[in-house]
Amino acid sequence: MPLEKAPERDVLQSVNVCLDVLLSVAQTPDVRLTEIARSLGETKPRILRMLRTLERRGLVRKSDEGTYRLGTTAIVIGTAASTQVDLVRIANPILEEVGQKANETTQLRIIDNGESLCIAKFEPMRDLRVQAMIGRRRPLSAGSYKVLLAFLHPQVQTQMIPEVLPRLTKRTITDRAKLIAELDKIRNQGFCVSYGEVSEQLVSVSVPVLAFDGSVIAAVNVGAPAFRTQRSDVDRFILLLKDAARKISAGLGW
Amino acid sequence: MPLEKAPERDVLQSVNVCLDVLLSVAQTPDVRLTEIARSLGETKPRILRMLRTLERRGLVRKSDEGTYRLGTTAIVIGTAASTQVDLVRIANPILEEVGQKANETTQLRIIDNGESLCIAKFEPMRDLRVQAMIGRRRPLSAGSYKVLLAFLHPQVQTQMIPEVLPRLTKRTITDRAKLIAELDKIRNQGFCVSYGEVSEQLVSVSVPVLAFDGSVIAAVNVGAPAFRTQRSDVDRFILLLKDAARKISAGLGW
DNA sequence: AAGGCGGTTACGGTGTACGTAACACTCAGG
DNA sequence: CCTGAGTGTTACGTACACCGTAACCGCCTT
Image 1 (cartoon, each protein chain N blue to C red):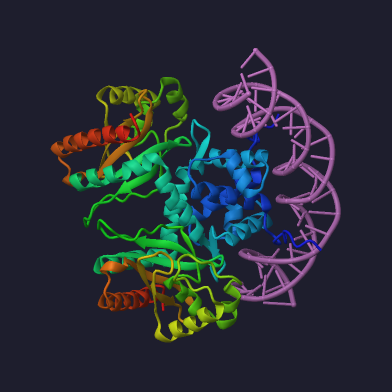
Image 2: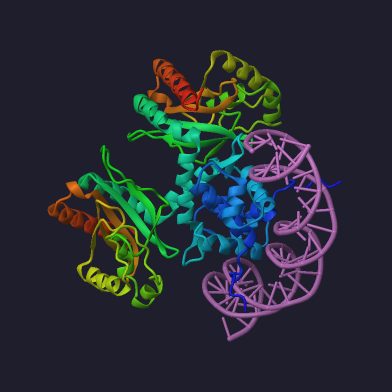
């Protein structure tokens, strides 16, 4: 029996592909028709039809050179979403507050599709700072984002950890057993500090945002260059983040 | 012959409806399945399938009570769009600058689907201020947004003006001939000031953003409460907006 | 001139996704 | 306690929307 495409019951594949196209354009601006078709493994006519419909509705825009970008309707939907998603709406001012006090970059990350996904951020006015980007994905196993794993129910946790752990730097944990031990430690202390696991010379601190039942909703994070971050700074970040996580939980109604 | 649905050649109606659903949720948060189906004139099973696919991709999220909101993927797409749409990316800091100097709300509006559409804004820190909202639509004929009409090519202009002009306040122009005369005046002086045409007690000033060939791209706008806006303020706004429009044009490469 | 590559069109067959109908469930009212 | 009017949901057979193939039209490069 062929194990390819489990057709995902009750999912309109036409709409599904159209969303693929949309995300494709979002990810790589000025992408061409052929490139999209190739990367999605679809035929050109099909993608052309998708793009035409998306263009007519202002979701994408075609440049004179035949490349595609997102359009104005995408902005409208996006800003509406920022106000509709409680987590982001609540977290944004709190992220800014922490970011101002720490004078470093802060992020809000959730689990999405087996990865961590940045859905809100704040960057301080400072010449040198960690660069964050809404929509950027990272493996769950690397960096301090692994708090997201640590506070998961044990069964889904092991299920969420892939067979082979991707290596981003020489400090990245790639041994499953070692990772699980680390996760235990994190769950006990309530936070995670990571040194150069995802990027060299970067230190990252994360604290989980928990729901009323103790399930993990998201993680708040401070990222900073290692050279200017003392042990005392890290401790300060942890306190700031714990406070922030508590506020966000409260803001969500718990 | 039936004049209903000209099937819009090469437009996937399945995708089309799905976008309707998405915009529906964007416009009215916490909307229910039945309500969407009713407002779009579609059947419930169809909309259910759409929502399910959208939900699986994180575009919308279903609450426990069965209502729908936009989801995290919508945020990702939206923020990507803000950086990809040149006009918005360029205009945003300029809008803020003008807004700070005027200490009033500023907007960037384009023509979309026969209406004016707000795609960027700035609101000053001030207790009482005009409220702007990205995605909000207004008739092209009312308020100072009519600069968008004024700088259109004459043939498309008349084609863009509807048969009957909607009345928003008692000051709204509802006579076609009068409107066209007004548009001539606006085109000559290069800006438009409107007193209470779209909202009572509000004054609004708009200046067109022109492309290298003189075609109109967008309009920049200052909106303020009438009671605190002197003639001299209006003049100041005009200067600020003209400068802003010039900068935006330049930023777009002209 | 020939070939490659991008985008586009045409068209006929098929399988996706459509609507109908019936189903569960909750709530309000009689 | 039943009934009716709301939800949202499932099942299913049919039709047509949409798909892929193939051919086409530029535009480059060789």
